[in-house]
Image (tube, rainbow, N blue to C red; front, top):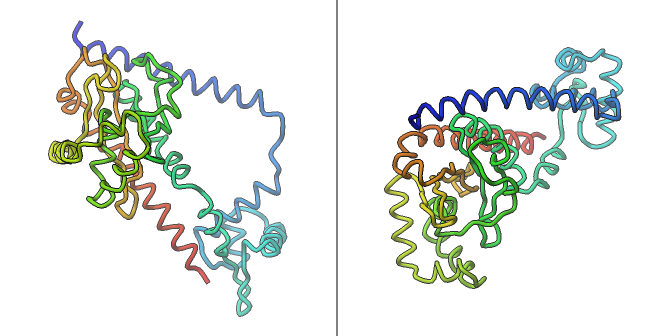
Amino acid sequence: MTIEKMLDLLQRHFRECSQGEHERRLVNRSEEAPYKDVRSLVRGLQVIEALSELGWAKIGDLSAAARIERSSTYRLVNTLIQLGYVSRRTEDGAVALTPKFAYLADALKDDDIVTQFAWPPLFDLSKDVLWPCDFASFVGGKVLIRLTTHKISPMSVHRAMIGKERFLVRSALGMAILSAMDDDELEASLEIVEKLGGANSEDVRNRERVRTMVEAVRKRGYASSTGQSEGKISAIALPVRGPSAQVAGAVNIVFFRSVMTTEQAAERYLDKLQLCVRQVERSLADFTERKSVASSEP
């Protein structure tokens, strides 16, 4: 049986399993939920979501947009005003969200935001290519896996991967992250890693070698590793950049090195990996823009 045929059969099996798992989760969720929805909270969030789309709005328009009767909308808006989340304009009585929502958003850590936006594209990528995929970020001089599809991939021999550390220059994830840094950020990061000690410290001591490796990744268009993190495993990876072009992390596709080379993997999957990264970056950009607009409202 050819590799293509094997992957096609596994893909069909994975789609069926994914659908079955999704249905089981829906059933379990309905069976296990011990509490009913708090209706006033649900309606309050509907008002907030409607205002985030409308901007300044009169109660009648807000009521229609949120699909909540007018009297209830008045009560919900008054509660939100008392809590400081909504303000009322004296000239015409229109209401809008206050910058307090921007302050709440600022309290979210960047890693928390990125991982929330990264999961749907990462899941779709793994479902498409079948191989497990990871999202990792560079925190405190370490490359840490934040999200993974190992648990749901039929091609994985690993399960508990979240929180696991990967080598900085021996892994595709680490090299993808380094390739997205400018020269100053790269040197500062390598200096931190060297001072932390350990295997990564030894790997980055030869700066010229690391810079040569980074340039090779940039020229190739993707990072790769062949048995450098685990003997039987290879991977290709791309960096994820935030709205200001700063590196937010990296996404990889992991596969058995006996099945294909990294060049073959890139030929088959690089366009799908690029799509995943673009989707994450677009979500980050949209979130940042919405947060900026909200914080600039009077």
